[in-house]
Length: 239
Image (tube, rainbow, N blue to C red; front, side, top):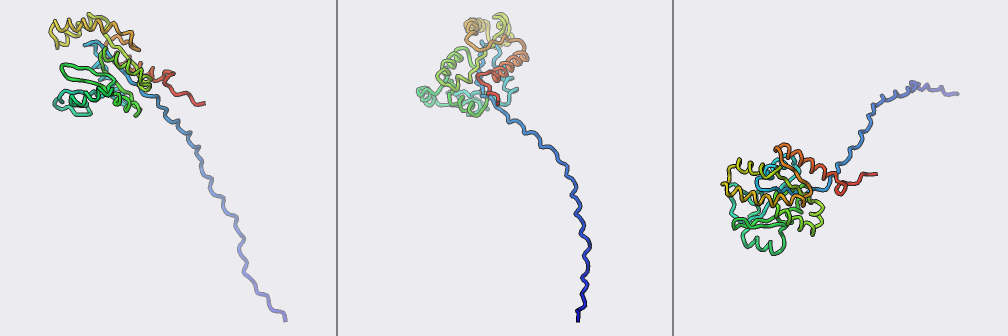
């Protein structure tokens, strides 16, 4: 006897899956080119007394956040508000002499019985951090630093020297008198020294004939920008 067949429930027809909604694709942004830092500069500014180099240095530091000044070592007593390692490196006479005998200073001088000097290590450590370093020195100190830099490849490559001077001794005399800090005999002595200093301008990389503070700064910034693009310092283009 044939067994009756069991009816299996029919499955509903399979529905084809709905296509996933198309996702909006945004193109990947082009990778940004990595900043290519140029080697830092050791900028030396010199001028005769009253020539305006201190003002120019202050304006340059304010306009260039990546630039720092070299901190001078001295044996004089700290004045009120001065901080060791910020305004000066304060040394005892014995400590200064020890450093001097070891050849640690790139330049040094004695002024009114106190010793002053700039350590080579001070300059090199800041340059190796990638920071431009600013030096404010007199003409004699500039000559010493140029000679010392010749024996230190890192300093020689970084050094840029600038001489700032008024257009004439007469203009410089007017500035000194306007400043009102010195008596007439002192002013005349300063002018005699200034005449000798100005004659050394050809020993510097650049000459700025001083005008207004704004114009002096504009010219100094142009020098910095030019040196940054100099082929001896610029990084080679990627090929």
